Length: 206
Image (cartoon, rainbow, N blue to C red; front, side, top):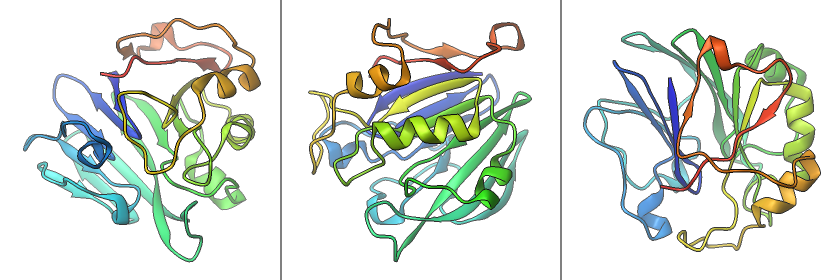
């Protein structure tokens, strides 16, 4: 399994048989969409969805199976407006579990934490400023979920046009306890490279 980051909340998870694109709102953020007709598409907030496309689109809670990929979605109040709901996702691919926080509010319920269960990779926004959860809330969630790998998204980036300016990534990394880091172009996840303790993985923006 490989994970690639494209800016905002947009991430692609892929193996040799499938590719999953999460929150391709890039067109609204001043970038070119990446979704193709072969992708499985996950949308955490319908209000922000710009380009759907894809071979199979998931934007509602429920259990889904697409080939060898399994996706479970649970409703969660949106950070922007708690009267509305988005979707918290758990993706199973290649024997790994990937949790996607998306535009959820800062505090997950016990039921939601149990729903996620054992998480190998956690994809979590950290930009804050009222648009997503902030660095402090992200660190709290990471401690509650206790994943093997953490991939931060939705932080300040000169290549991405945000409606609301996001906090710099360094605000999160310092709180997380890793003030210095070396971004990777892609994160390849294998049983042999899963860390014993939670590890930060910063990905280059494609």
